[in-house]
Length: 419
Image (cartoon, rainbow, N blue to C red; front, top):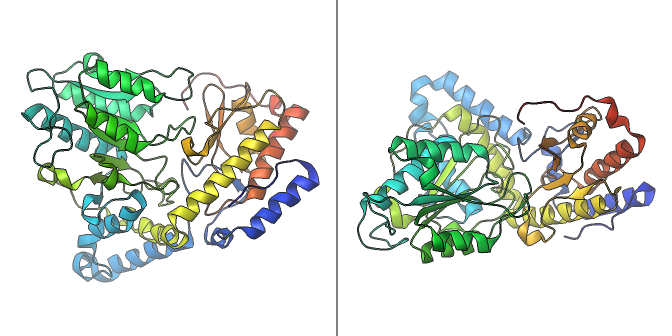
């Protein structure tokens, strides 16, 4: 799928509409309850009729069967987590047995990082990725570090630091942080240098950086980690459902993600995790799936599977390419803070502007929903299942009009707080 020729005015709008008319995924938009121009699906996806229908059905099963719903539900609730794991597994390139739907992203980070870190430091011999053993260079008496980067979502670091403290370890000594050179991206060479120079047990990275949208090469990072005796884990929260993954064949050891962003499973939706089958001997125990929090995911996955993850990715690239091209034509105060190469960019674009906060507030009052990330980023996420090229045109056109009129200056500047 190709992006339309970028431009403003009536000709630009007509080019966007023509691209929407050619879009093979355009028909999916009517299945979502979206008003205005919604560009915040990388934070929370909207409700689909499919998700609502499954949730209504499960509520009826609860009413009709009560406790017997665990066996009499259709499908039965008892195996809901495994069933949904099987439906999610193609989206992350995993075998059905390697995926479970359970917990929250943060809980799953605690579970898997803690499990694998303990296993590395209790094993002797072997090498990372070995089917019979999980080990690195460290030992229980000399634990190594966990490798992260300074542009991670903060919650991931909070969880990892907590796991280290629970083991009596100082996070400042056992958390190795790869620094960004430009405040937007992480260089592969810097990751390799940290793996080579530090005693690293685990690498834990996001698939996509939440601010800039940088997309990492998961297979390459996994190979790097394994070459240096470390295991590789990933947080797919900002990529699952919009970027295809191939976790099993890439040899990724473990991964976590949420389902409420591009997979549109609703606020508080149950999360997911992956564990490579080579490590099944150390798989942690899993609890009961929260059925009401899982039901919307069931319906949402039907929509994604019907559209096809490869088609979703192709449209996502075209939408973000178009957005980047339009931002390039805005006044000089605007800049693109995401990688321009689509192979290195996830599903959203970081639009930079000195007055990003006030522009974000002005956009929302004009029914354009985006989000702000300090100090100067407007995150715009044109989710392929319910967003078209004309929607992207509207965002850029509204930004241009706001900047030229100065209407955003009517809003109070941001003061204090964390977004």
